[in-house]
Length: 133
Image (cartoon, one colour):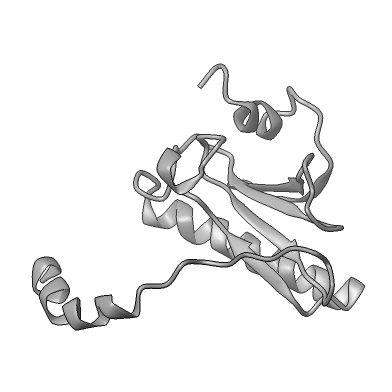
């Protein structure tokens, strides 16, 4: 993907602040941080989202998410994080290269994710399960 900014970052063709790197993955600070140490973890190969990444590559990405999270715990004492990934435009994905956000959180940080919930949908769970069997 010639125009993918995350591909360029992984190849060293665009500026980034490396947190961790291995053969398959790259972790770096988000240039639009919502907290200190807000980090993105990506596969070095281009995959658009969760639907097209092979399982082996996804395991490598998730291993890096864990390593970076433990790094922050061990070095910085960070014990509260959100791990977020969006797949697809309607799910608010903005950069179409699979990535996971590691967002350190603390009380009073002003970041509030609130979802609208639909408890009435629980009555449809049996029907919903039938559709995916």
